[in-house]
Image 1 (cartoon, rainbow, N blue to C red):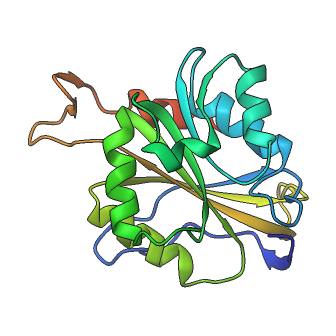
Image 2 (cartoon, helix red, strand yellow):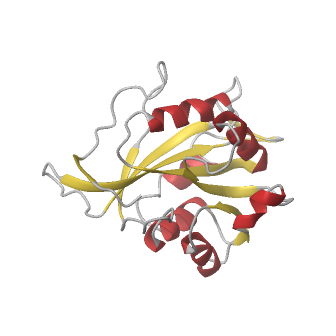
Image 3 (tube, helix red, strand yellow):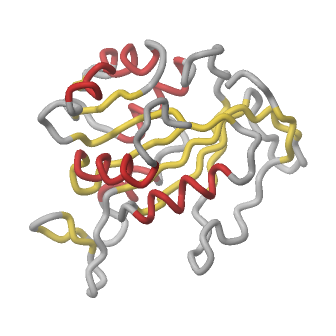
Length: 214
């Protein structure tokens, strides 16, 4: 994930999946990961602080020690990377983080079904992709939606932040697609297991604060 593409700031218009509205796009100015690793330390810290609370469980399916360090520093709980070899442990998580493409033989939809089963209601799945292939994020979103995950947010990671009022050429290195386990009932509230939350709560409200870590 070290290759760079100098692109203009993305414009959040157009459907990713036909018939669905576009999701918000957020730019995070964080360093690129080293070769063979999923993310930088700054990216890991932002994901942990923006998508979880203290004592929340995080399933770490990434390459490199960055997420583990961020989890420890933020006083969260972690299933080890090797947990995927033993069924990902027994608990359910508030956050699952994985690189893409998958390194093992499971199909994309099968993988996302398993992720959904391991998420708490309102929990999030963050999928990190190297930037550059315009088709791959679409394929990921379609597969996740087939597993009944809701597409919540698209984070664009770049070495330099955009400049307000100027068209900026950003050194984009990573796309982060964030999905949530959310069940929308026929009423206007959001179902989270046995209880209902009003719109804007849980994962959605956490993500409105995602521009800066807590």
